[in-house]
Length: 363
Image 1 (cartoon, helix red, strand yellow):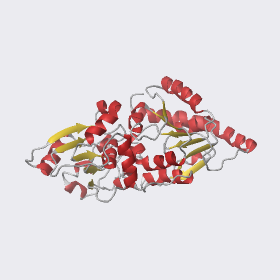
Image 2 (cartoon, helix red, strand yellow):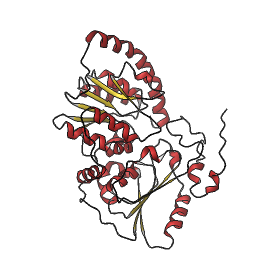
Image 3 (cartoon, helix red, strand yellow):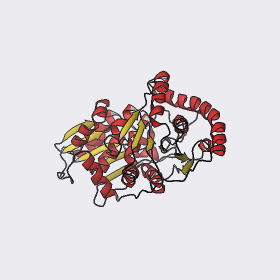
Image 4 (tube, rainbow, N blue to C red):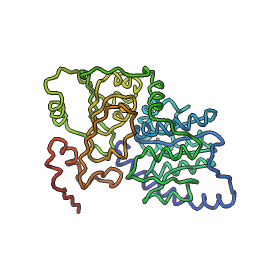
């Protein structure tokens, strides 16, 4: 499955079918077995995060709290190869269970292998807010506690998961991850302490010493397949940098290409040498903010209020958000209403585009 759309289709169709089959059995077995589902950790933990490495960075405070609260328990991550590259930078997981999502056959085979690894684990924490197959996997592990989220469109998880935490798409995502960690006995550390832990996990010095004025500029112009409408064109980036840097002599380093994914530790070391990062909404941006790089970010299809961690006092973080009537649209609709004509991003260079609400019609 090369495209994200194909993966979402399989997740929706196959996941819905399996949930329809599993839910009656899960309810019946729950009634008969009367297992103790007290919300506490009594054994090993498996966290599920298949897509979205940036979301794992946002979950760092929660994951660090879990790691510190249960140091004797094995903390594993079920993920895809792309997500693992981000996960390894966190320094909180003991091992990684990789699911291959390149095709239906590889998904099933690797899923069965992963299921054997996770069989009868004590606690499964599903951080996938929208996925059906991740819910199915959690159920099939027969874990004592199967934890997930519910929102207005995910009540189908009831009876399959043992504990569902409310996820409000209009509020900060990290808060929802943290409620699970707190419910399981964790204490959320101050963000400065989280930053220090992340820097230490990646072999970075305790503090940064950026130059002033900035001479080494990072550019994060790529993102995952989920909403490529977040991206700016090369011409738009050229205009932005020209307007902001003028004739200043700087070195620009391009980050975020596919070549960076297998070597996350190396690109983080390089990222830490940057004086400033210009970026769209991406996992790279979240890493830069967490390690303390000065950032300037541009948003449109996603809302920075829901997708940014708070920063320690003294951090420099410049956020530009063109909130049109149709924004944010990611996770709220399967197909962006603009169908690729992302005027919410174009508006960063042409503010007049935001003056008149857009009209989007489908047939």
